[in-house]
Length: 288
Image (cartoon, rainbow, N blue to C red; front, side):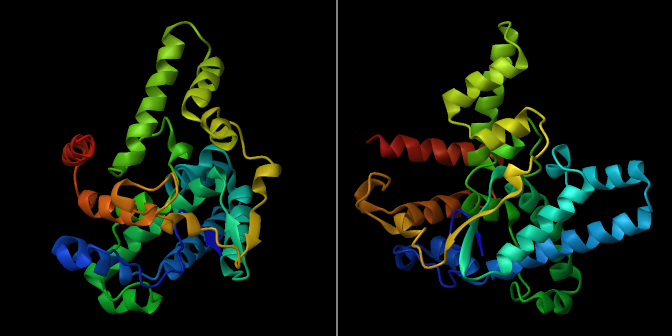
């Protein structure tokens, strides 16, 4: 099973304040209606099926195939050609279907999952609106549209694989980090540093992982980064999210997962400007 920032096999997520907050309960009800396992599977399977069809239809026309990759995989095409993308999709599907282990995603794979899900969610949501009975066949939700921006905020660790790239969604919390990194790199270049030097300096300042640095430096994915690292499904890799006593907990003993859901319910559906206002108010209150 693919390991994201939260456990995708969790069927009944809850929040201790649902009973006192109608908006939060509505948000958690929405979360409980999503089968994340099937959402990810169908996203990857759809991407793989259409890529294979396109490869067959193009019959070796590399220019047309390149154009398709740029359109269907806007993040991934920067570091992987069609054969590599196909190999990565097969690895992801095999790993996702293997329930005995958790498979962690590096940022090369995260970019591909992001591309596949972004594209599939658009198709799925259109089915929910225009042919709801067909959307039910996927077993993902009961005629319910998926908020991709919200899903990414909850289940991705970061969007470092998109640093320097335009974001098609609000992605507020990740956008702030990416913009700060991009500004840091640009300042380094403006001061006379080479792009490579500016990236290395920003990587140290913002703790950017090596795989994200490689993507930012326009390097192709190598054999080492095509490996998916796994751990037994029996290992409690999400235990820290529920720990109220750890240093990573928040005020009043709030654990990470409760904080994450509470913040996300406040940001869901907001514009960049409204999200900025909400977060600013949260930061102001936390200082008192």
